[in-house]
Image 1: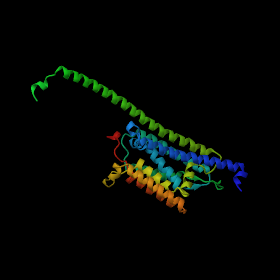
Image 2: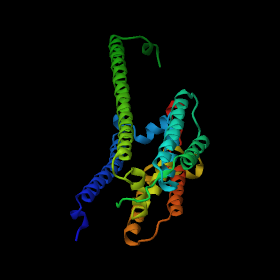
Image 3: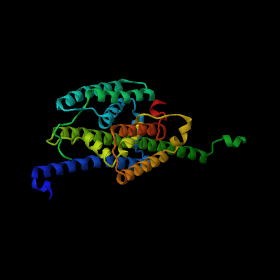
Amino acid sequence: MDVGNKNPDNAALKKQLRVIKGIILGLLIAMVAIDLVLVFSEEQGFPTFSKVFLDHRTELIWVNFLYGGVMTKIFWYRTVDKPRWEFSGFLIFAGIVVALFITGMLLTLEVSTPYQILILIGGGAAAYAIWPQYVPTTSQSN
Amino acid sequence: MDLSDLVLSPSDETNISSAASRKSLLESYFAIYYFTTMENYEIVEYILIGFAVFYLVFEIVLNLNDLDNDTSNIIILKWAQDKMFFLPFVFGAIGGHLFLGTKLELFRYFRENFIVPVIILFGIALIMLAIGYLVPFKKTKAFLFSLLILGFLYGHFFWTMNIVSNRWT
C-alpha cells in the first residue's frame, strides 16, 4: 500500500521535492552542457567559463571564498536545531562575501595562487565556524 | 637588386593603393572581430551571472518554503551519501581548476593538453558512479570530505590552467 497516495499533503510534498531535485540536477547539467558548447565555440570568440574565471580571478575572490564556504557547508557541516542560528550566520558570511567583492573590485594586482588557497580555506573555516546547517529535530522524509 | 627595383612603376602604385585598401579592410575586419569577440565574451559573462542569480533566488525560495531539508546543499549531500559519491571529488576538481593551479614543470603535459585531465576526470566520475550503484557502503563525513580535498588536488595539479591571463601581461 502506498502511504503517499493516502496522504495528499505528503504526496504533494514529495512531488515538490522531486521538482526541486530536478531543477538542481538540471542546473548542474546545463552548466556542464553550456561549457562543452563553449569549448567547441572558442574559435567564434566565445570564452569558456574557465577562461572568464582565469581573466577575473582577482575580482572573483569573493566567489572563491563563497565556493570554499558552500563546499564546507555541504561536506563538512555543523548542525544546529534553531533556524535563526543558520540565518544569522548566513548574514555574517554574506557580509564577508560583500566585503571581498568590494576588495576584489578595488585591487589592481593579480591575487596569486597561494593567496587564493588561503581565501578558499578561509571561506571553508568561516562557513564551519559561523554558518551552521539547520536540521529540524523532526525531519521530514525525502 | 638593381636600381629599377627602387623606382615606382604605375603598377606598383596600383599595388600600393590596393595594399592600403586591403589594410583598411583588414583593420575594419579586426575591429569588427574585436567587437564581436567582446560581445561574445560578455554573453558568457551574462550566462554566468544568470546562473548565479537564478541559484541565489532559488536557494532563498527553498529556504522560505514549507518543506524542510530541501535546500540544494542538503540535497547534494544526500546524493553524495547515496550513490553519487563522485560529487565531492568533481566539485573539488572544478574548484581547484577555477581558483588554483600550478606552474610546475612536472604537470606541463596536462596544462598543454587540457582535454586529457577532463577525460580522466570524466572516467573517474563514471567509475565512482558505477561503484556507487554496484557496491553499497556507508559514506561518512570524513570520506566525502577527503574526496573533496582529493578533487581540489586533482584540479590544482592535473586540471590546471594557471597560465598568466592576457589581462596581466
